[in-house]
Amino acid sequence: AININKLRDLTGTITIDPGFKNSGSCTSAITFLDGELGILRYRGYAIEDLADQANFLEVSYLLIFGELPTAAQLEQFETDIRKHTLVNEEMKGIIDGFPKTAHPMGVLAALTSALTAFNPKSVNVENEKELYQAVCKTMGKFLVIATWTYRKSMGYPLNYYDNTKGYVENFMNLMFALPTEPYKLSPIVTEALDKLFILHADHEQNCSTSTVRMVGSSHAGLFASISAGVSALWGPLHGGANQAVLEMLEEIHQNGGDTEKYLAKAKDKNDPFRLMGFGHRVYKNFDPRAKIIKKAAKEVLETLGVEDPILEIAKKLEAAALEDEYFKSRNLYPNVDFYSGIIYRALGIPTDMFTVMFAIGRLPGWIAQWKEMRENKEPIGRPRQVYTGSPLREFKKPV
Ligand code: ACO
Image (cartoon, rainbow, N blue to C red; front, side):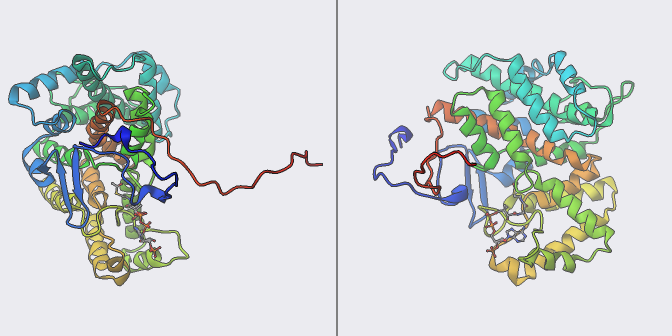
């Protein structure tokens, strides 16, 4: 095995690799990704099999602890998470301090960070029991506060976790249940959400995960590291793309569905517009998650009887881009978020909550990567630079 602490700069030179396009930051046994062949596996299991046969908590357990849980382990995991779904009442005061118009991702990052204040003790990763408890606490509280960002934006009273329901069912209940009426959930919705969360659960060293590992490498706590991950995820080049995709599709629809015009804009190097939901740093052939989601979007819409012109625009745009020399020569294909928003929309989830959905899905990946980084005793992340500023100058106050 490679001892990462011994991988030192032996030559004295510094390599520059902006965006880390060719630099590995760690070794990891969690997720395998082959961008040329379009392969994604969690702990050795194909993403297609997991999306088809497992549920989100099973996959979370697999990512975090390395093996699929037995039925008893899964039940225990769910019970232990449930025990940690109560959030300090003072947190409500923090939520009240935000304007209703605040973006849910901004509120989520702040609330996750605030959880650090209520849970200041740092986790001893060598103590199995303590680590397990921290995992359950993070999984439990994060789900609840994520849905509170929506309740706040709507001005609704906050809902509490319902112990008679499963984790994914609870998400919809926490979001949409009325005081007198629990949310009526169809199994199709639970299945679709399970799939979406699984597909987003980990993706090796992406921007938000690298951020979680980097912040955690200073031995900052789990909530603080996750909160940094939420902020990194928010950007439109990363998790924020799912919101941007839907806004783009809506705009195309409102402007008469002229996909060619938007394709031309995306190709114009003088126009900053990019086709949102297209392209990926690592997948240069296809994104295996996009294939699963495209199929799921069609199924969900058909089953729920939703006719959405946005789906037709997405299909038209995809077909045109796949035939286009600009996109073909740059290996630009739809990524996971090109179709996810269409499902979220069909489930009644507002557009500005899409990236929060991504964060809920990515949470077990962030936890698993944080845990692995600490267990591997990785050194503090501290990249070098090549200085390009002024040489030594004589100090003189400007007159
Ligand atoms: N639309 C138009 N052109 C694009 C797009 C796009 N969506 N994506 C990349 N390109 C072009 C670039 O302009 C560049 O062209 P050039 O060689 O003529 O200069 C070339 O393709 C390579 O692009 P880079 O930006 O160098 O690729 P990089 O790996 O740095 O970026 C990224 C990947 C950020 C995903 C990019 O493709 C993008 O901005 N896509 C749109 C946003 C998006 O969907 N993000 C979600 C990513 S997946 C996720 O986080 C779940």
